[in-house]
Image (tube, rainbow, N blue to C red):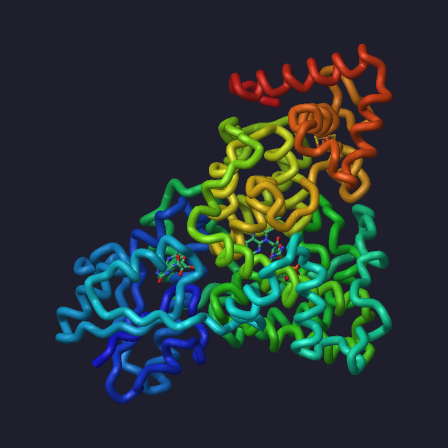
Length: 507
Ligand code: FAD
Ligand code: DLZ
Ligand code: SF4
């Protein structure tokens, strides 16, 4: 008999380990364990989603004829870790053989490879590109740019292709996207689900076991099985996809989801398949139910960004999360955990994150990420924050987004320049500034938007590294044209802001 390990983000009926197993002899091992639930202090909604989806998946495997050994978190015999549970089951059933699917995190890969059992880890092939394919594409390139990798994936899958040419004549329709939204913009409500018995049981458990984790557990409505996740996808395609591209980058206080799909968690734990999702979106475009800028923009996020960051994570190796190229070491201020702040944008995104375990890409990149980078926060702490607070956060996708794209902590493995902006960008793309204690129009003084001050502080701090970057040279020229007095005032005000923040003042 062989043990077949299925992890909490491997809930796909055709996952590699199950394909290699013999249903008549082998035993599927699934376990809710303290080690996985505590390697960061996950948002309670994330733990609830993973546990509820695991329980339902285990039952669906049993219904399909598999033998499943499932350990609940509060089982008195629970050893507390995945290797521990494999050892316990191995002893119980007199076997030393384990087959699994390669986990999405180096920590767990190493732990499984170090086990005193015969563990075979199969490649996780729920992706468009294999590791070998990504390596072939990346090897020998001076720069790794998502856009070129994405075109390869379009050619490979045939998605939105007209023979050898991109449908509509362009690879990328971003030029038509990125419109700001007005506060009264209508957006369809996302599809949520009332907790059923399984979910209710898990919610009770999470409330009992993780009472102090940051995040609200109330109004849990995430999908926890494939049928529900499919329904979320249908709902998105029918109601939101047509305007996805237009308002992809917009941010509104009272409209938390806009036209986003809310499917990242389902893709990441295996309830949805990325290629199937993209084909469904392509069909909507073919049937004239969505414009090309929406379909292309959406498909790019999945076969472009999602596949690309995964390639980067595994190519860069286990040390990736320790990188700190800009030598940033300020502690994460308490506002990231919900403490009071005068910055309306930060307050709003953190509150939404606490309530929903969700923020969309631009909120993560241009509000919390932008602030962390400008303020010089320790990238490891920033990484741990993103890994814990979002329902879709798994290291293979979170780390390159946080450390590479958002914090430039990898020194620019794939980002051509740091994603930094002053308050102007946030003001243009959101309705946050109207209710802020700071003034986005003020460039100096105590009322000045902190993003306006810190933006220059960042550029000056890192002048040696960035002034020769052609995409940043213009900003240095603007800075150099300011009067000496103005430059000194900006830097002084920025420094005062950082010191106040360090001293624990409400900023
Ligand atoms: P939509 O906006 O509707 O996009 C559709 C799908 O495209 C998403 O479901 C997702 O699967 C994919 N996608 C979009 N952008 C990216 C991207 N940059 N990288 C990978 N996939 C992408 N995404 C995660 O899945 N897990 C994370 O832990 C995560 N951490 C992030 C951290 C930072 C600092 C940043 C800037 C981005 C992060 N992202 C992460 C990417 C992105 O923010 C989320 O995928 C997206 O917000 C999920 O919401 P959605 O399903 O409504 O996406
Ligand atoms: C995220 C998570 C949590 C909270 N709990 C479990 C668990 O108890 N058991 C399990 O098998 N997986 C869990 N996961 C998902 C793993 O952390 C994930 O498989 C690794 O981080 C690799 O991506
Ligand atoms: Fe954020 Fe500055 Fe706007 Fe306030 S003024 S909401 S701090 S961007």
